[in-house]
Amino acid sequence: MAAPELIELDHLPAGLLECPASALHQHLRGPTLITLRGQREQPLVVSVLQHGNEITGWEAVQRLLKSHYQHDELPRTLVILVGNPLAAKHRLRRLDEQPDFNRCWPGGNGVDPEYAGLFRRIHDRLLQLRPLACIDVHNNTGLNPHYAAVNRIRSDYLRLASLFSSKVVYFTMPGGTLSHSMSEFCPSLTLECGQAGETHGTDHSLAFLEACLHLEEIPLTPVDADAVHLFHMVATVTVRDDVLFGFGRVPAQLAFRENLDQFNFCELPAGTSIGDLRNGTASPLVAVDTEGLEVTDSYFRFDQGEVRTSRDVMPSMLTQDRRVIQQDCLCYLMERIHFEDNEEVTGIDPLPEGMERSDSPSSG
Image 1 (cartoon, rainbow, N blue to C red):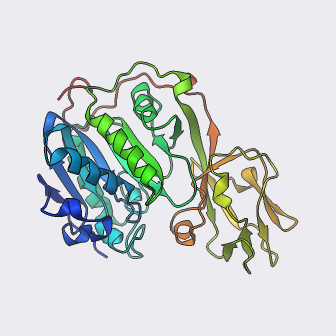
Image 2 (image 1 turned 180 degrees about the vertical axis):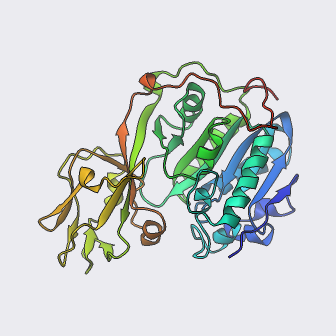
C-alpha cells in the first residue's frame, strides 16, 4: 500500500466531533494535522490514533473540543495529529499492508521509504510550529497502570510527565516513535492510558490535556524524587516467528500462563515461571537490549518444560493479544533508576538549520 498524503486543516470538518474513531475515515483519508487557534500562539501538539485500535486519545480530544472549542477560544493553540483513520475503521492497530505508524518517524530502521518520507514531512512541519510540548496518546492491550513515557531525563520533561502519573518510563527503543523524534526539540511524552474503551482512561487523558492547554510554561526546576518513580526500559521481548504459542491450557509449543498481563509493573523475582514448553521447544523467546544485542540468556531460562526468569525483572506491556504480539512484541523489561542522579540540565538541542525556536518554552 502506497503511503497516503499528509492532510492539513485549520478547522474541524463539519460532523467530525460526532464521529467515533471507526468513522473518521469518512472525513479524513489519512494522517491529518488539524490546527485550532488559541489565545497563546505556541501550540500544544496532541497525537491520536497512530494505532487505529487505541481510541482513548480521540475520545479525549472529542470531549475537550465539545466542551470548549465550540463555545470559547482555546487557551492555547492546539495541533491535533490524527494518525491512522483507515486502521481505526477496522479497529486494528494497523492494516496488514501498512507499517506501524509509530515506528516510521525519523530514527526508525527498515521503514518503507514512502512512509519514512511522509513522517519526515510531518516531523518537519511540527518543528516549524515550535510546540510547547508534544503528547502522543496510546492504549495498552494488557493490564497496565496509567503511566507516561519520556525519551530524555530532564526536569521539564519529568515535571510534565508527573502531571499525568507518578509512574514514568524512560525509553530509547524502539526507534522511530513520534515522542523520540520530537524529544530533542521540546518536551515529548507518550501517554499509556490503559485499555481502549475504559472511561477512566478517557477521563484521565482529558484532564491532562486540559491542564497542558492552561500551562504558561513548563518549569525547569528540579522535580521532587517522591513525585516521580522512574523506570528504564532495558529490553524488548518477542516470540520467535516459528513458535506456536497460546495462553492457558492450549495445545501449543509455548503455553503462557493465564492472566500473564497481571505481571505488568510487578517486580518478579528470579525463577518466576511465565509459561510451559512442550514438544521439546528450546528457546521460544528473544530479548534484545537497547543496543540491539540479543540478551535472552540474561533474562530467561528454558528448562524442565518451563520458561522462567533468570534474574529479577519488571515487565510492562505484557499482552494476551496474539495479533499485537506478532505485530509488535510480547513485552518490555524495565529496571528502576534514580533520575536525580541522571538528570540532564543542558538546554534543548538546536533545531535544524533554517528553523527557529522561541527564546523560552513559555513564549507564545
